[in-house]
Image 1 (cartoon, rainbow, N blue to C red):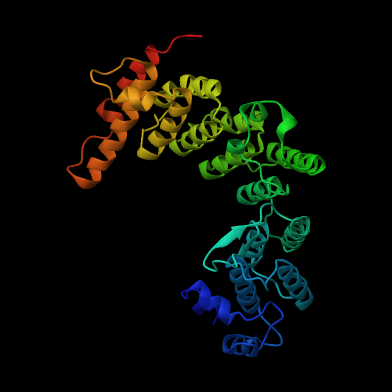
Image 2: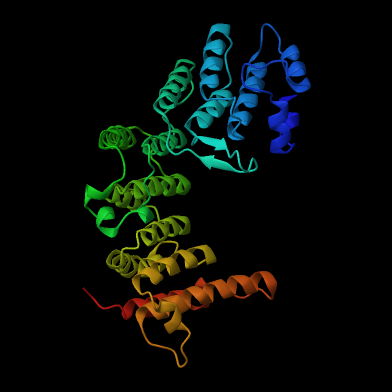
Length: 359
């Protein structure tokens, strides 16, 4: 029954879900749902109950708090039923999600309340403990990364690299708009998780999870760890992929730190063609590189449009990125051309790299 409301609009769901998690009768849907809920529920019945609460929390229903999932966890433990792993993972993901609420002025919008509350973090640990007691794996890639993201958002004010001055991002801790004790507690927890990742036999090798970790450390200004994650793949004799390069260039561009953007561009643009297999310059990667180029050389856009062409390392890279985007667009709208990597991208990269002045 609960799955039938997934296809409805959010406003309809919010009406059907009544006043909150303790409301069992105010709407026809709630009456039917709880009347059908058996006195001795099975694992599937508990999964439906959890799904209902998770949907309400995701939609920002003011009457459904994450604490309701804690009440469900205790009820499931008392029932003695072997709960499915996917049910507990669903609860964990909801608890670790960022807090949101419905905008009273515009109910179609949800506002972000920022980081994870301490009680929610304790509830997440209770769920993990229950999973371990039931024999489910808890030290997995996705769970470790989920915890990293949740812990990094525990500060009352979220810090992003784009919100800070270059001095604050690259070494000076004086401008951090956050409670220092809270930040220190967060860093200690991240240290423990980092230690676990280094010593447990669950290497973070998924490019999606690596990119998520890079984003976490960049948003917190932990640049030494950011580059540690960046170095993981070659240390394991694996190539870096396009999504990792996208995340790296995008996070560096967010800092608005010109000298660092220049250093990163000169160090890693030529490296893309040297990966095995080499990294193809797709439109998403090209746009992230252009973000860095605009920070490294603010007039690059104007100079790239000058005729005859201006000679320069950043203008040349800008044109390479534009060419890759044009080729991708032509591949969709017109005859399929050769991929940019085969059509001269590697030669352009080597040529551009040879023109880079050596430090």
